[in-house]
Amino acid sequence: MSSSTLRLEMTLKNPNPIPQRNKGKRKECRSNPLFILNYLKSGYMGEPIGILKVIVVRGKKLVIRDFKTSDPYVIVKLGNQTAKTKVINSCLNPVWNEELTFSIVEPVEVLKLSVFDKDRFKADDEMGDAEVNIQPLVKAARLKEILGVANEGTILRKVIPDTDNCLASESCISWVKGEVVQDVWLRLSQVESGDIQLKLKFLNVPAIPPPSNFKPLT
Ligand SMILES: [Ca+2]
Image (cartoon, rainbow, N blue to C red; front, side):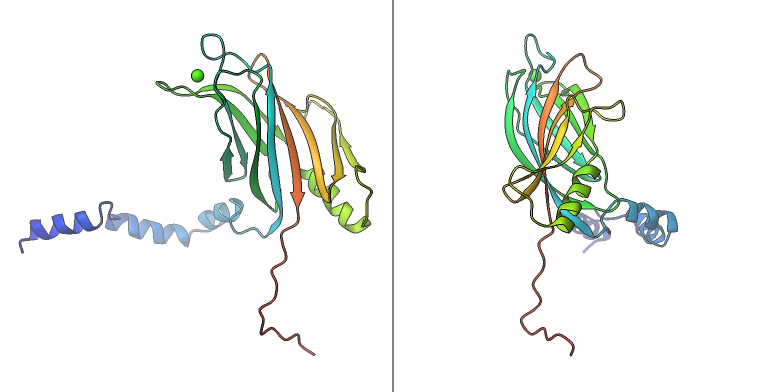
C-alpha cells in the first residue's frame, strides 16, 4: 500500500484527526493553573447542592419582530447549562408551560434568559433578555429544611422589584405541595416591552442509597 493510500484510509477512519501540535497543546493546557481555575469556575467540578426546575409559563406583550407578530422561544441559562423552549408561532402573548431542569452548584449563578423570534431564512431576532438571582430561593429552601414543617401555601420569603433585578412585580417564595416554589414576572430589557412569567422550584439532590454490601463501621 502506497503512503498516499494509507493516509486516505486513515482520514476515512478518522475524518477529524487531531493534529499532532494540538495534542501537545491540549496536554499543556490541562497542566496550566489558569486552565484548571477556569475549569473549576465552569461548575463542572462543583458538588450539586440542588436541582432547579424552571417552568417557563408565558410571555406578555412581547415585541413584534416579523410583519405584525413574532414566533417567540426562550433560551434559559444557568452557568454553563443551557435549555430552550419550543417555538410558538405568530403570538405576542405565548403560553409555553414548559419545564426546564438545571443542577445548582456552588457558587450559585444568576439565571439568565433571552427571548428570540424564530426566522426561517435569516438569523433569529432578539426580543429581549432578563435575569433572576436564585440565591433567595436557595436560602429559603435551606431555611425551610432547618425550620421543618410548613403549612401549605406558607410564604417563606418575598423579593421586591429593585434596580438591581428584573422583577416586574413582587415575587413570593412559598411552600407548595411539598416544594419550595418562587413565582416570578420578569421585565425584558433591551426592548420596548415584554414580560416573562417563570415558576422556579428548588429540589434537594436525591440521596444516593449505599451499596447493598455496605456495612457501617462499629
Ligand atoms: Ca419570525
